[in-house]
Image 1 (cartoon, rainbow, N blue to C red):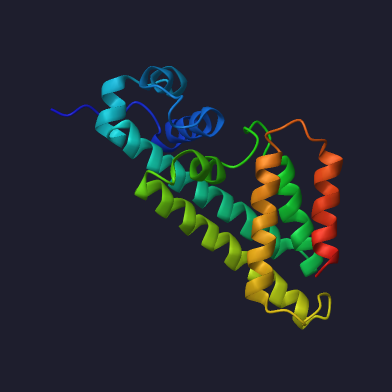
Image 2 (image 1 turned 30 degrees about the vertical axis):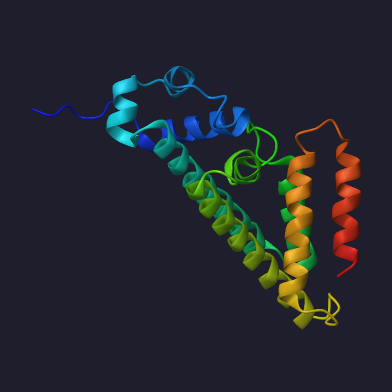
Length: 190
């Protein structure tokens, strides 16, 4: 008779996600995952597959959680400017008790050039981010908050590049005040 699982898959997947996010794929060993996730090695294989498959599932989990969080922030915003300010603050500070930076950005830098699956998941996530930024820019252009001289697609690509840069910079000791100046100027240029 098959044994029932004695753990919540999403809880242990979140633990794996945070460990990969903090350490990267290559630095994270299966032993690290067993210790951090609080499950047996066999349970990891039975539930998630091998380390690479677990990593891809962690990337999916991260994308879904961040997308839901940012979409919720945008929906609660009263103006497009406020929505962008909230997104930039999220990029700079992240969530409480989370590693700095971004799992997608970190993974793209670490692995995308030699791992087609990671490249695909990273670029899909980046496309979602750009679409969210485009929607906000269009909102701001329609309400007269932002200049309409430039195409919203082009502006979204530019803002996304700024966001990626900010996510990388949050992993350094650069002061948050500098990151805010960069974000504020990016909004003003719209």
